[in-house]
Amino acid sequence: MSTKSAPASAPTTAKTTKISTVDVAELDTLARWLEKSALEEVEIESAGTRIRLRKPSVGGTMAMVAAPAASAVPTSAPTAPAEAGSPFTSPMVGTYYQAANPEAAPFVKVGDTVKEGQPLCIIEAMKTMNQITADRAGTITKVLLKNGQPVEFGQPLFIIA
View 1 (tube, one colour):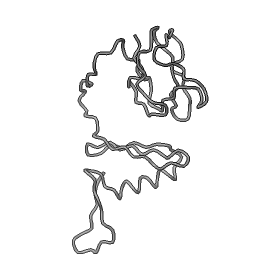
View 2 (cartoon, helix red, strand yellow):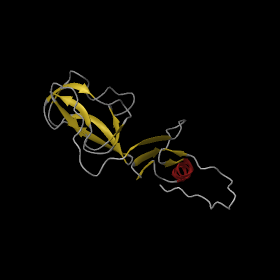
View 3 (cartoon, helix red, strand yellow):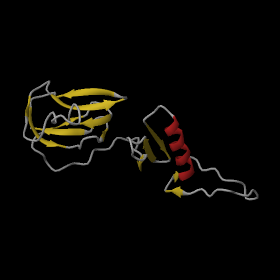
View 4 (cartoon, helix red, strand yellow):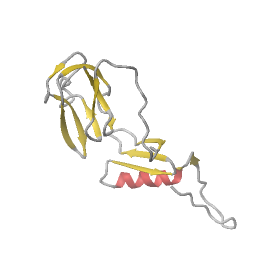
Protein backbone atom coordinates (compact mmCIF):
# COMPACT_ATOMS: atom_id res chain seq x y z
CA MET A 1 0.00 0.00 0.00
CA SER A 2 1.28 3.44 -0.72
CA THR A 3 0.71 6.48 1.41
CA LYS A 4 -0.23 9.65 -0.43
CA SER A 5 0.46 12.96 1.22
CA ALA A 6 -0.47 16.46 0.18
CA PRO A 7 2.22 19.01 -0.70
CA ALA A 8 3.38 21.09 2.26
CA SER A 9 1.56 24.21 0.97
CA ALA A 10 -1.80 22.48 0.46
CA PRO A 11 -4.22 22.40 3.41
CA THR A 12 -5.20 18.93 4.58
CA THR A 13 -8.68 18.01 5.75
CA ALA A 14 -8.08 14.44 6.91
CA LYS A 15 -5.27 13.02 8.93
CA THR A 16 -3.74 9.78 7.64
CA THR A 17 -3.04 7.25 10.37
CA LYS A 18 -0.66 4.38 9.89
CA ILE A 19 -0.56 1.13 11.79
CA SER A 20 2.85 -0.39 11.16
CA THR A 21 2.96 -0.32 7.34
CA VAL A 22 -0.84 -0.21 6.95
CA ASP A 23 -2.57 3.03 5.95
CA VAL A 24 -5.89 3.09 7.82
CA ALA A 25 -7.52 5.37 5.24
CA GLU A 26 -6.73 2.85 2.50
CA LEU A 27 -8.07 0.03 4.69
CA ASP A 28 -11.31 1.96 5.16
CA THR A 29 -11.61 2.40 1.39
CA LEU A 30 -10.93 -1.31 0.83
CA ALA A 31 -13.51 -2.29 3.48
CA ARG A 32 -16.18 -0.09 1.88
CA TRP A 33 -15.37 -1.58 -1.53
CA LEU A 34 -15.66 -5.13 -0.13
CA GLU A 35 -19.05 -4.37 1.43
CA LYS A 36 -20.39 -3.35 -2.00
CA SER A 37 -18.76 -6.19 -3.94
CA ALA A 38 -19.98 -9.74 -4.48
CA LEU A 39 -16.81 -11.09 -2.86
CA GLU A 40 -16.91 -12.53 0.66
CA GLU A 41 -13.21 -12.04 1.39
CA VAL A 42 -10.17 -10.26 -0.03
CA GLU A 43 -6.51 -10.69 0.85
CA ILE A 44 -3.76 -8.29 -0.17
CA GLU A 45 -0.04 -8.17 0.46
CA SER A 46 2.13 -5.08 0.42
CA ALA A 47 5.35 -3.88 2.03
CA GLY A 48 5.83 -7.13 3.92
CA THR A 49 2.32 -7.16 5.45
CA ARG A 50 -0.56 -9.42 4.45
CA ILE A 51 -4.11 -8.23 5.17
CA ARG A 52 -7.29 -10.28 4.86
CA LEU A 53 -10.72 -8.65 5.06
CA ARG A 54 -13.79 -10.86 5.34
CA LYS A 55 -17.44 -9.82 5.16
CA PRO A 56 -19.27 -10.31 8.44
CA SER A 57 -21.63 -13.17 9.09
CA VAL A 58 -25.20 -12.13 9.84
CA GLY A 59 -25.13 -9.62 12.69
CA GLY A 60 -21.33 -9.60 12.85
CA THR A 61 -18.68 -7.03 12.13
CA MET A 62 -16.08 -7.06 9.39
CA ALA A 63 -12.95 -8.93 10.38
CA MET A 64 -9.41 -7.92 9.49
CA VAL A 65 -6.32 -10.00 9.98
CA ALA A 66 -2.93 -8.37 9.44
CA ALA A 67 0.17 -10.51 9.56
CA PRO A 68 3.70 -10.39 8.24
CA ALA A 69 3.72 -11.60 4.66
CA ALA A 70 5.29 -14.94 3.91
CA SER A 71 8.80 -14.61 2.58
CA ALA A 72 9.53 -15.64 -0.97
CA VAL A 73 12.17 -18.06 0.29
CA PRO A 74 10.63 -21.27 1.65
CA THR A 75 11.32 -21.79 5.32
CA SER A 76 10.81 -24.84 7.43
CA ALA A 77 7.58 -24.94 9.41
CA PRO A 78 7.88 -24.59 13.15
CA THR A 79 8.08 -27.98 14.74
CA ALA A 80 5.33 -29.01 17.11
CA PRO A 81 5.81 -31.42 19.96
CA ALA A 82 5.90 -35.00 18.71
CA GLU A 83 2.36 -36.30 18.24
CA ALA A 84 1.38 -39.91 17.98
CA GLY A 85 0.57 -40.20 14.29
CA SER A 86 0.99 -37.90 11.34
CA PRO A 87 -0.90 -34.80 10.20
CA PHE A 88 -3.74 -34.93 7.73
CA THR A 89 -3.53 -31.63 5.84
CA SER A 90 -6.08 -29.51 4.04
CA PRO A 91 -6.20 -29.97 0.27
CA MET A 92 -7.59 -26.45 -0.20
CA VAL A 93 -8.19 -22.98 1.21
CA GLY A 94 -11.58 -22.34 2.76
CA THR A 95 -13.62 -22.59 5.95
CA TYR A 96 -13.50 -25.77 8.06
CA TYR A 97 -16.75 -27.38 9.23
CA GLN A 98 -16.79 -30.46 11.46
CA ALA A 99 -20.30 -31.57 10.45
CA ALA A 100 -22.65 -31.53 7.46
CA ASN A 101 -24.87 -28.95 9.19
CA PRO A 102 -24.99 -27.15 12.55
CA GLU A 103 -27.38 -29.69 14.10
CA ALA A 104 -25.47 -32.79 12.93
CA ALA A 105 -22.83 -34.68 14.91
CA PRO A 106 -19.19 -34.12 13.85
CA PHE A 107 -17.91 -36.46 11.13
CA VAL A 108 -15.05 -37.52 13.44
CA LYS A 109 -13.82 -36.84 16.96
CA VAL A 110 -10.73 -37.77 18.97
CA GLY A 111 -10.54 -41.53 19.43
CA ASP A 112 -12.55 -42.41 16.30
CA THR A 113 -11.12 -45.04 13.96
CA VAL A 114 -11.35 -43.96 10.32
CA LYS A 115 -11.07 -45.89 7.07
CA GLU A 116 -9.55 -44.64 3.84
CA GLY A 117 -12.23 -42.66 1.96
CA GLN A 118 -14.30 -41.91 5.09
CA PRO A 119 -15.55 -38.30 5.38
CA LEU A 120 -13.58 -36.27 7.94
CA CYS A 121 -14.94 -32.73 7.50
CA ILE A 122 -16.24 -30.19 5.03
CA ILE A 123 -14.27 -27.26 3.66
CA GLU A 124 -16.33 -24.48 2.14
CA ALA A 125 -14.60 -22.71 -0.72
CA MET A 126 -16.33 -20.15 -2.92
CA LYS A 127 -19.75 -21.12 -1.50
CA THR A 128 -19.16 -24.77 -2.43
CA MET A 129 -19.18 -27.40 0.30
CA ASN A 130 -16.33 -29.87 -0.33
CA GLN A 131 -16.40 -33.12 1.63
CA ILE A 132 -12.86 -34.04 2.67
CA THR A 133 -12.13 -37.75 3.04
CA ALA A 134 -9.38 -39.69 4.80
CA ASP A 135 -6.41 -40.63 2.62
CA ARG A 136 -5.47 -43.46 5.00
CA ALA A 137 -6.90 -45.59 7.77
CA GLY A 138 -6.09 -44.86 11.40
CA THR A 139 -7.28 -43.31 14.64
CA ILE A 140 -7.96 -39.59 15.13
CA THR A 141 -5.65 -38.51 17.96
CA LYS A 142 -6.19 -34.77 17.64
CA VAL A 143 -8.58 -32.35 15.91
CA LEU A 144 -6.58 -29.18 15.23
CA LEU A 145 -9.32 -26.70 14.22
CA LYS A 146 -12.56 -25.38 15.64
CA ASN A 147 -15.76 -25.32 13.62
CA GLY A 148 -15.97 -22.32 11.27
CA GLN A 149 -12.23 -21.54 11.33
CA PRO A 150 -10.50 -20.45 8.11
CA VAL A 151 -8.01 -22.98 6.77
CA GLU A 152 -5.09 -22.65 4.36
CA PHE A 153 -3.85 -25.15 1.77
CA GLY A 154 -1.54 -27.66 3.47
CA GLN A 155 -2.59 -26.66 7.00
CA PRO A 156 -2.88 -29.67 9.34
CA LEU A 157 -6.51 -30.51 10.20
CA PHE A 158 -6.15 -33.74 12.17
CA ILE A 159 -3.48 -36.03 13.57
CA ILE A 160 -4.10 -39.62 12.48
CA ALA A 161 -2.20 -42.48 14.10
